Amino acid sequence: MGIVMGPNQYGKAEVRIVSVNKDTPRHTIKDLNVSTSLRGDLDAVHLTGDNSNCLPTDTQKNTVYAFAKEAPIGEIEDFALRLGRHFVNTAEGITGARILIDEYSWERIPVGGTGHDHSFARSTDEKRTTAVTIDGDKAHVVSGLKDLVVLKSTGSEFWGYPKDKYTTLAETDDRILATAVTARWRYLGTDLDWGKSFESVRATMLEAFATTHSLALQQSLYEMGKQVLDAHPEVAEVRLSLPNKHHFLVDLKPFGLDNDNEVFYAADRPYGLIEGTVLRDDVDPAPQAWYSLAEF
Ligand SMILES: O=c1[nH]c(=O)c2[nH]c(=O)[nH]c2[nH]1
Image 1 (cartoon, helix red, strand yellow):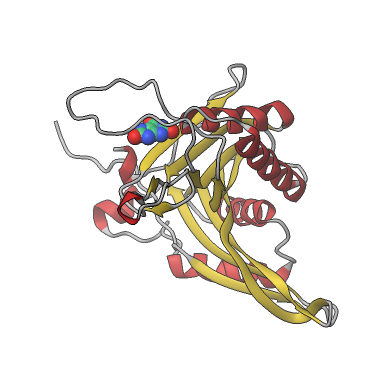
Image 2: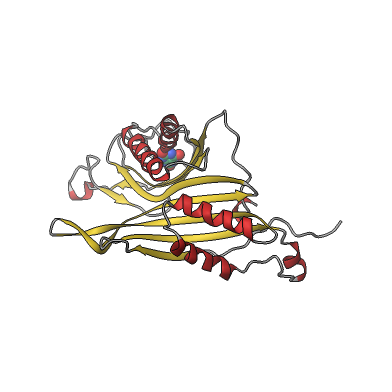
C-alpha cells in the first residue's frame, strides 16, 4: 500500500500567435492558439521538485514562436507535428507530446472589388482545429472544427418518443433544427494534404446536415459521420458534439394570429447535447487519450 504519482502531463496552454508572411506585398496571416503538453520521466519533479527533466513551459512557448519564424507555419497539422517531434526528439526524459491548435479565420477586406493586400476581417467564429500526439516514434493526428453554426428551417421532425408523467414536449413534423457543430476526425496517416482533406470533410458534413430529412438530431449526427467516412478513406473515425439549439414556436393566438411554423423563440439554454462517434469497424481503435480531468 502506498501513494504514487499517477498520469500527468504539463505544458503551455493557449499560446496566441499571429504570423504575417511578407514575402510579397500581398500578405497572408496565420492566427493560432497553440497548446503544448509533454509527458515522460517526470516523477522526480512531482516527488521531490527535481527539475532536471522539466523543460520549462516558458521554453515550450518560445519554441512555438521561434518555429513560426524558422519555417512557414503551413497547415496546422504539419506545424503541430514539427513541434511535437522536436520536443520528443530533443528534450531529455520527454517521451510524448501533444500539440493542440485552433486556427481563427480571416478574410481579406474587399476594396474596389478585390481583397485588400494587408487588411482583414474576422469572417466567422468557426475554428479549424488539430490535436497531434507524438508517442515515441509514433504520431497520430485528430483534426476538426468547432463553432460551425448551422440551421435547417424545415426538414426536421421529432415524434414517437416515450411519454411519461413529466413529458410536455409536443410531437412535431416540422421544426427548426439548429446546432453548433464540434467535430473531430482521426486520420489514419500523418502525411497527407491536410487542407484539401479538411475542406472536403467539412463540405461533406454540411451537405449531410442539409440533405438528411431528420427525425432526430441523433440521426443527423450519424449521417454526417457516415458520409464523411464513406468519402474519406484517410479518416478512421468521426466524433461529433451537437448542441440542439432549440427554437420554440411563439404563441401568437393572443394577437389573433396563427403561427404556421414561422415565428420562433431562439432559446440559448438549456440545450440538448447530442454526442457520438461514427467509426470503421476494421481499423485499430484510437490510442489511449491523454490525461483529462473529464475522463476520470
Ligand atoms: O433531435 C432530438 N433528439 C432528442 O433526443 C430530443 N429530445 C428533445 O426534447 N428534443 C429532441 N430532439
